[in-house]
Amino acid sequence: MMGTDSMTEFTNTSNADPILITSSVGRRGFLGGIIATGALALPGCTSLGGLGGFTLTDAIREMLLLSSDRAFARLTADGGYWDDQVERVGLGRIMGTRGDVLSRILTSGLFKNQLQNAFADIAIEGAERAAPLVADTVRTIGFANAVDLVRGGPSAATSFLRGSMGRSLVEVMVPELGQAMRVARDPVLGQALGALTGVDVGSIAANFAGEIDNSIWNEMGREEALIRANPEATRNPAIIGVFGTAARF
Image (cartoon, rainbow, N blue to C red):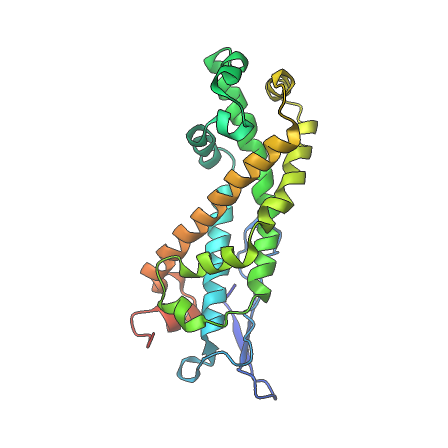
């Protein structure tokens, strides 16, 4: 991610656009530096020669890296976000159970709260598993329709990325979530899973992964919209150059 502390410009000897390589500054610890990366210009992208050699692809990639960084920081923080999400989605939908079955499991309000907390903790593990896949895809994906993405709606780039990745986040999270449920030492979760009939852990993991997937993309889209609304606040030259008030696009 581009920072304001240091930035070095290197000029290609080929006919490709200039490449800006920047140092990673102040990255989130939970990602272990996975998202920290320089913006890679792709040959053939629209170049903004008057803005330090940035391309539209640079700006889109930088915006997606920043929006995903912010989104995953919230999604992997203890408490708060997932506590609310699990309650909103509902345990019945997450566990794939009918109301009468769930009512037999949730014998008290305390039991329900504890079970929601257990699923919130597991959701954090799922988001942590998905984060590096999103970062890797942002670094390598091509944006053939870069102009349309720049001129698009508040979350156009996020929607494009989601369409390109399909169900890959769900597929990578399901084994992780299933394993987390099987080895969980939370007695409430173990009791709830043991009380279910006709529903296996794999099915619950698949249901839950779908909900986490939706949350990831919703949060990234929300962050993209905030960046587009105030690109100057990012202090990122590529983002400001393309999405700022003085930009041509």
